[in-house]
Amino acid sequence: MRAAVVVLWAGLLAAAGTAAGQAAPASARPRLVVAIAVDQLRADYMDRFRPFFGRGGFNLFLQRGARFASARFEHATTSTCPGHAVILTGSYGTVNGIIGNDWYDAVAGKEVYCAADTTVQLIGSALEGRSPRNLKGGTVGDLLKIGTGGRSRIVTVSAKDRSAIMLGGHLADAAYWMEDTLFVTSTYYRQDLPQWARDFNAAGKITAYAGKRWERLLPPAAYEMVGPDDMAGESDEAGTGRTFPHPITGTPGEEFVEAFDVTPFGNDVLADFVMRAVVEEGLGRDTIPDLLGISFSANDRVGHAYGPDSHEVMDVTVRLDRTLARLFAFLDRSVGLANIVMVLTADHGVAPLPEVFAALHPGTSPRRFHPAVVDTVVSAALAARYGPAPAPGWVAYHDQPHLYLNLAALRTRRVDVKEAERVAQAAILSVPGVHEALTSTELASARAAGARSGDVLSFFPGRSGNVYYQMEPYILADDDPTGTGHGSPWAYDQQVPVLFYGSRIVPGLRRTPATVADIAPTLSSLLGLTAPGGSQGRVLAEMLR
Image (cartoon, rainbow, N blue to C red; front, side, top):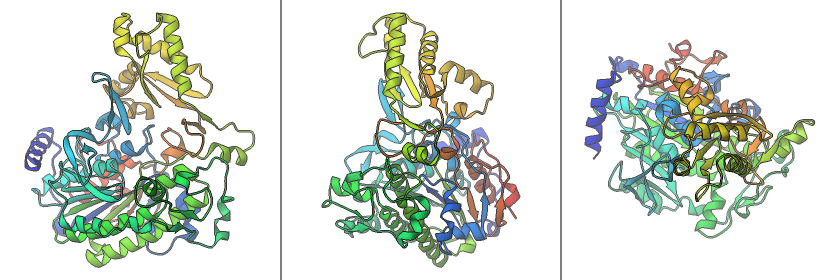
């Protein structure tokens, strides 16, 4: 299966003129490219928490690498799967097709998960198969694999399947992620877990945390800069409490996994697995460049529960700094930092807890908004215009920012889809707190005209909803009464770090415009490749030697 995929992609890329260009001299190319994504790492954390960073973690980039201080995503759907898809394709959902973690297939009448694939199976779990089949176009790793005649090794690791898969692209040799208390993969990549991964799982690295507690790493007084420990709107996730210390409750099982997932320790276990993978998968051993993709997910789970202005988010960030320092020291010993190019970014930021923001900014009106309100007003508007809908109703599926109409009901009532979209659009715009609402017809027209707004970059025909809408800043569209989220076009969700390190990187702080989509063409340039087809970024030439 893998050989067939390689042949197919080689043919497609060559036909499209996007295969590797003239390779740079072997001495100029890195032996290993390391692409790191930190799930839910806002750009401002690099300044807020920097006084507590050590020497070898984030400061490897901040002191000896290049930092783009104004970097951001341009798309509006700032969530995990779309964010990871951008990093190594250089394209947004309007090109790569990843418009969300999930979307609705109107023809099949079912929800689609971004990394789902029923033609393959998981290894180590009975859950549905996973692969990159929904990702359109290639990644830096795909082009590297083809450009070196298959000799490069492409390996990705994350706690989340979608993160590892989107970083790996179509031709990765391996993508590993956490499921329950084990690292697993899919038959898309290989037919069995390698022995070293089975040995790692058998060692019980995750279950060893059962019964332990998450304590602050720093003295408690250091955390006063972010406010009190117990803040309005924080969650009590899996019985771990809203204040330190957080007990990891339950014996190994579902209850334990839920508690473990909202601690920093998943990052530590992930780093251990990554280091083992570097050795066992033979990354960086010779002059043929390899690519290692890593996504740290614990920050996202902690951030959702406690918000960006919490002791917990400060602690998970500072702890990740120490974990990165340990990882980078290992890479220096095993491959040599002089032979490595690294980039660190994030898939999205996060909104403040509405309750916390309101307390810090009197006179503002942040609040929680239940998306079911939109279902109600749209259904009422369509019923008033066209009468009661056939079951199950006028709205087929709704996952903010996308609302999908029931096309079968429209056909039954002989209603024009474009007209129904306009009725739904007007209804959504009547809801207090809605910033904008656009129909799929409007977005398709803007896309065809080459528009580059965040809405258009998040739109893909046949996958996006009939109506797309966004709330005003600091209004959190979520049905959960506590915690926070992301997924908006506002700065707190779009602005993320873009940091580079390597021998061909000129160190320094840069305020020139940069986007996450610039990472892929820049890495391609360093590897002597053309950018992935469909890339919408630029080479960050101002930082290259």
